[in-house]
Length: 169
Image (cartoon, rainbow, N blue to C red):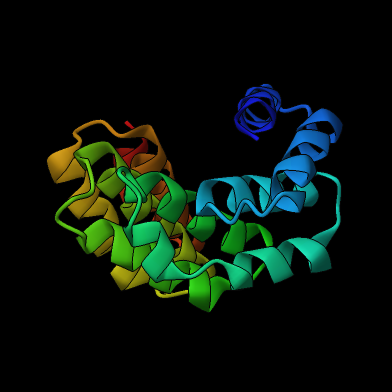
């Protein structure tokens, strides 16, 4: 079981979906229910465009199981990102917000979660909220490229070209 899991993680990390799924499936068949395994399987299924199956796996992973992990922020980030790929933006927002506000989350994960929250706000045309989030990211991570690009893009969408230029530079 452990060898299948290690091989699955190696192939997943290399982005080789077919081999990753082979070993992930082997781990699951012997009763593996670890959220780290299940979410990697869902991610590989998204790569293979098996969206319905991936959605079922993501929904089956309980937050309480993720929180038992030694590094829960990793699976929390993967789960939240999967919701974006699955176009379930309300659940993505909820998951990223939980990650961004969890005091155990490392600062790099908090910044990434906030950048995703800003992008979600931009997509929902919640421009003031998006700018506020990007500003909060730029305070804790000055020069953050993603936050600057999202902020500039939102200003462009609003026709505020001078502010957009300022955000980009």
